Image 1 (cartoon, rainbow, N blue to C red):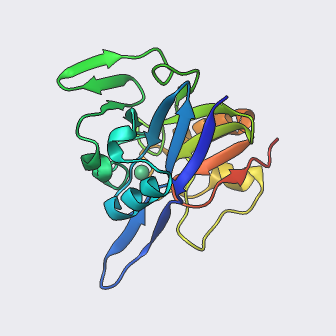
Image 2 (image 1 turned 180 degrees about the horizontal axis):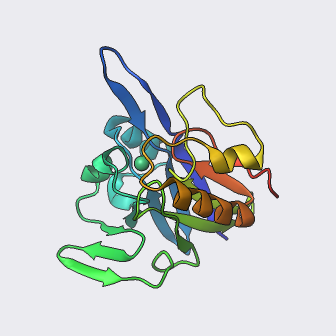
Length: 197
Ligand SMILES: [Zn+2]
């Protein structure tokens, strides 16, 4: 069975003097002997220390999954120069682009396209013993620190997203995931139970 562990809970808040501070939820998935990191984020120092806490070095990670290409989600991939990068469609290996079949390579974990926040956005569906079906949904659902959604399904579907590329598509993607997942890991904010279930 798969194991999911949130190494860093995503955060997002205004910083001093017109700056903004954000890094997404970074999740370690252990599946069929593979260690996969979802969205390394933008805080290399914190990620290194959280990996160390798990007894891991960056070289122990088999490959990286990126939910989408917003910089705050991808900057810390610099810690993993040798690993493959997997996204909604492709395994990126040096200069080769290998189309996958909708699963994380070597696992039973489904990669589901969830466009709307950005056109290439994808989420993971992970079957676990501890939580049932976990969706690593990233920026399909996110909020600024202290502005957490209410627990109603309607509020979750209509959650505002100032960065959405297509709000209508985003709502459809959210509805699809809320039909499947028992627990959801949002892009910025704490893991929550799906109120629809
Ligand atoms: Zn984003």
